[in-house]
Image (cartoon, rainbow, N blue to C red; front, side):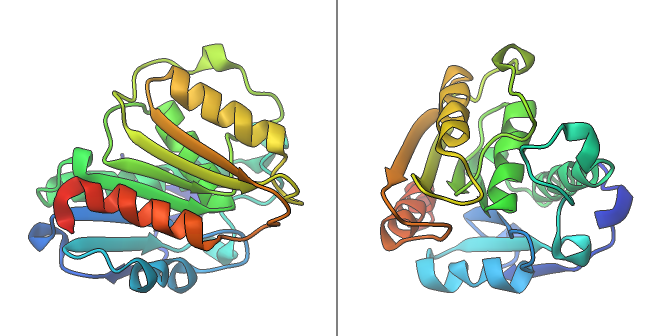
Length: 215
């Protein structure tokens, strides 16, 4: 997939070993108003050895302008451009000798929505998916519109029951759909947490990446 649209040509931050020297890779996707530096700082927290981290940056720090609950058309062309960025990075990993079975998509907020949407649209076996406070994108979600198999890709999701941006129902529906697509889903709800990432979620993310064999 070739990156296109408003997000093409934006900065890409890296942490850890080069992809061709790494055991695993993580594509880390930031949320609205944040940047690549914010999300890639998780690499220092998780400390998973032999893991290459890549963090793309959205134009104007926003992957798409409106809520992920709005009609998809209202978030174009930014959403399709964002999808192309993720696809382009996965292609880069493959071109560098990294099997996608050892690649993890990780995101927070908008980034988590983008990770969810990408793997639902393009299901296959990935190394894993980490969804920190996010869900599938669109005003209405039609499970029948997603076809294919995630082939037991490990998928961790965490969200508050009182997140002001992510309705619990959408988070739960996302887990159900990804499970129906064949993902090995572990979705957890945290009472009163708000819109943030807690220690348990970080531990789950580290365990998911480490089980690929890089730790």
